[in-house]
Image 1 (cartoon, one colour):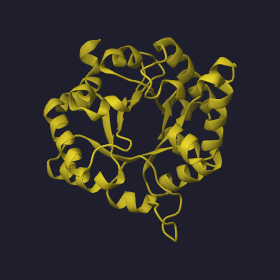
Image 2: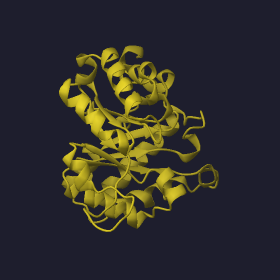
Image 3: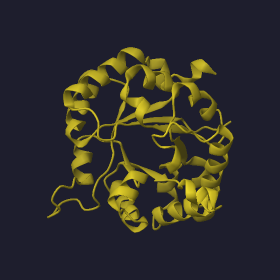
Image 4: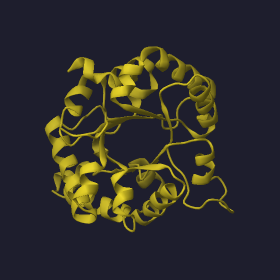
Amino acid sequence: MSMRKPLISGNWKMNLNHFEALKLVQELSYQVSREDVDAVDVSLHPPFTDIRTVQTVIESDRLPFLLGAQHCYHENSGAFTGEVSPAMLAKLNVAYVIVGHSERREIFGETDEVVNLKVKAILANDMTPILCCGETLDEREAGGAEAKVAGQIVAGLAGVSSDQVAAMVIAYEPIWAIGTGKTASAEDAQAMCAHVRATVALACGDAAADAVRIQYGGSVKPSNAAELMSQPDIDGALVGGACLEADSFGRIIQYRLAE
């Protein structure tokens, strides 16, 4: 039985203004009990314009949620118009930062090298990276899924110590399942998450591989969360659309009730 505490993360993407953010967090706090979050960690990843609002309500109401961000630049300050630094996020008590999400890679051209710089910068500012990896449908159908995912992990973790990797989170998100309603079967998700763990073992050692938390992402819903979370190498979920509504995200957090 794994000792890894599951992490359920809500990636709001480019949705919800700060008024809507406040409402969602408060509604979620009414639905989710302390017992629920004793069993799982929960991180919320709002857009940058909402982070201060969400931080304030979490801290003032002592809500059992961890604050997250969706992205950052790899420098702590400087002439980088439009960017937000990891040092700025750390000052807002951000705990987790998503890095290398497929939308950042595919739409904004982030390379494995850039992702690696961001992983190191997030760690240097005492926050935890959620390193994303995943393959397209074409890559999967051509038999290249495992090589693509392994390459992203090895490149993303280059120069990161085994102890740091052990405390990180890696999110496997098949690109073909993000926002499409398609979900990898629990067996397929488990197989790839086991491959992720094996890749970490080769790159960083068995201790890091055993400790690192691996999330599955890609159309996670209340109806499939329990089956996904029952897999031995799946330690959480990176949730997109279903986290924008308190009832659906709350039921994913409470997936144990459906088991």
